[in-house]
Image (cartoon, rainbow, N blue to C red; front, side, top):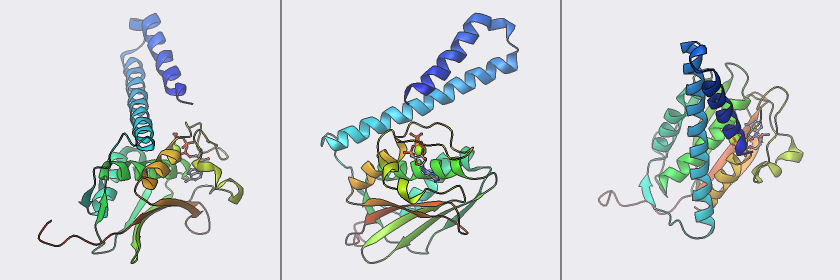
Amino acid sequence: DLRTPLTAMRGSIDSLLALGEAIPVEDRRELLEGTRNEAERLDRYIQNLLDMTRLGHGGLKLARDWVAPSDIVASALQRLRAVLAPLQVECLLPPQPPLLHVHAALIEQALVNVLENAARFSPPAGRLRVALEYDEQELRFVVADQGPGIPEAERAKIFDMFYTAARGDRGGQGTGLGLAICQGMVGAHGGRVTVGGGLDGRGASLTLHLPLTTQPQAEDD
Ligand SMILES: Nc1ncnc2c1ncn2[C@@H]1O[C@H](COP(=O)(O)OP(=O)(O)OP(=O)(O)O)[C@@H](O)[C@H]1O
Ligand SMILES: [Mg+2]
């Protein structure tokens, strides 16, 4: 749950307080870096939860702007570069995809949450594909991996708040909020999120569907 990062942080802080100077400098640094990473993760989560709650109560107005979907992909990949570094990431972007009229930060967050899961469940050096697809009605961000996949019977549940499940030795314990937040943010834009099979007959794919609207005139940017 949400307290897991706090428990880890308190553990590190207690060790530092109790042992302090007795801990070798390198280990001390590692404890501090771990604590900072957990704090950042918690901060992101609380921000996401607040955004989602505000969206649900109409307290957060969508700040829509015209944005190139490839920019959203690029910044999500940039934010996760450390997590994605051990994987073979393929990015399939069509040459001139239509623009989205969205609150870019929220859609980027939705994509980050899905990419984070794909990376966590991927085998070492596995392939991870991010693709953009579109037709007349909608634009899709498709994230596919080579992990254990998601059993049919579980596919509806994974969007529930606090639903989290490790698979085999992969996944570890999560908060179970990532996909609930993703669905909330995409839903606020009139879109939806679907689950399917992954790459080479294994793994999972998560697709964010976003409705397309009449494109802006070239002049009004
Ligand atoms: N790419 C994937 N491959 C296999 N299982 C997945 C994948 N993405 C999600 N799941 C399953 O769906 C569950 C819910 O995902 P969600 O992102 O909501 O929570 P979490 O990743 O466990 O925790 P959090 O995102 O809050 O850290 C995961 O615990 C996992 O069981
Ligand atoms: Mg997650």
